[in-house]
Image 1: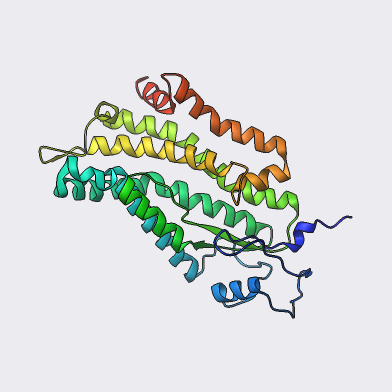
Image 2 (image 1 turned 90 degrees about the horizontal axis):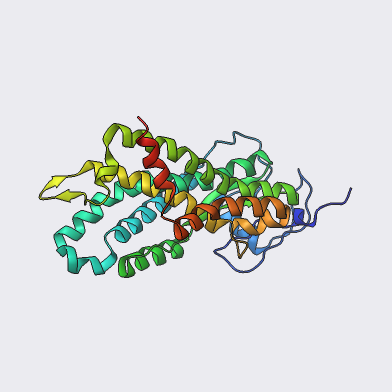
Length: 295
């Protein structure tokens, strides 16, 4: 049996340095040599990365802190994006701009938060099922850059962080860990269509798609419901498609390396709604509205 050379490679951090390697170590053994990557993990977890033996749903206090930090910054950036960044000041005024941000943030947290958080948890769970150490770590510089870009330009471009993985894995296992996140986004997208249709049936929110959240001092909650469905569906498609790109540290690189056919299949599934939206008058929201009108 040929040993996969990837068993010597620890998950590359997208936040630090270049490609990182550790010496070949069998399960149950410890390396007696020190290296920058060992020091990196010692700082993060206070222990050497080791084969996971506990509950796969365990989240350390440090990991919870990083998840909270990343989610809060991500939500703030989405609020700035919704208000159009600083450009929105001229059209909404200072008070209207601040109100738009404050109203948008909980909506974005509900609609987009699961797409990001559950994506990362998907990686974590599958990595731990394969016996790896896996914890989420936020990228402070990526978060700061994303918040500033959304504030000044009104667009979202952010690398909130990633699940750091250490352990002995095969190419197949590495592909399974990588594909878990995009598959979570695909599942959330599919679930969002019937749930969105049900919400529209109960609230008639699709009739408020062009209205703001606050009109003449009245809160238009139906408009908020519409945007929750819209951003839920859009965020999961965009995040899944982006992560399936076969470049840099993205999931698509590892999935394609494991199985090119699987990569093409999932990539085209995510790409299809985008192409339909760009080339036709239809979109996933068209399907949601159509389903809501069946009753």
